[in-house]
Length: 275
Image 1 (cartoon, rainbow, N blue to C red):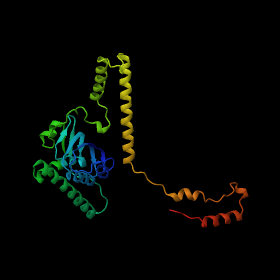
Image 2: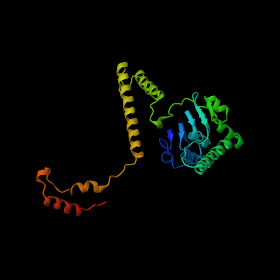
Image 3: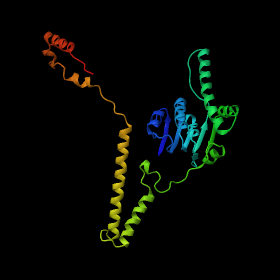
């Protein structure tokens, strides 16, 4: 199966969503597609740890793996692939602070601690010393293009075009399956089976109907999966019930009397708020 980590880490992509998508069997092969500018480093650590505890994890870097997303691919044990246009970037953790010199010093120590964790991940994966990695992070280290990422030891190869049948779990109707269906119809026509028309126009109509049905099925499956993945927040019952207890007050100010106000106060005080 393929899991996509896209957008801002900690906002668009979270460890909680990653855990929900992973299969229960920790040895089942998982392919993770990463395309992110980074984000929350702690969320990135959580995603790295989650993937590191699994087997048969492969990662593909899309257009970018930067900042908090740069070390997520290092959790793969089954190889990291890149594209020709991929970009990888590592730098020091960034933040802002307000206060006196002690506050600033605490912020510096805080950021240095984050940098130390990231540097250790890089050093272990790339076979470099932590000191060398830290100096690279100080400079803000960029790698442009898939080949540069491979040469740096971050990736093991270029990603390849999927074979027939691959990618169907993502809801994609690939060209190979379309051509296979067409050839099946043509073969049936050549064999002159009585249940298949020999007219090319009729064959095209059947093929279009076949693909339309398949696309509809895929879309319905995607909607079903999205509904399962999206938690439904239960609305408090008391809001609806309270509306039925509202006292009927006259809507014209000229008709309001003290007795109406007193009645409203009594009614309000006797309300119940069931949960």
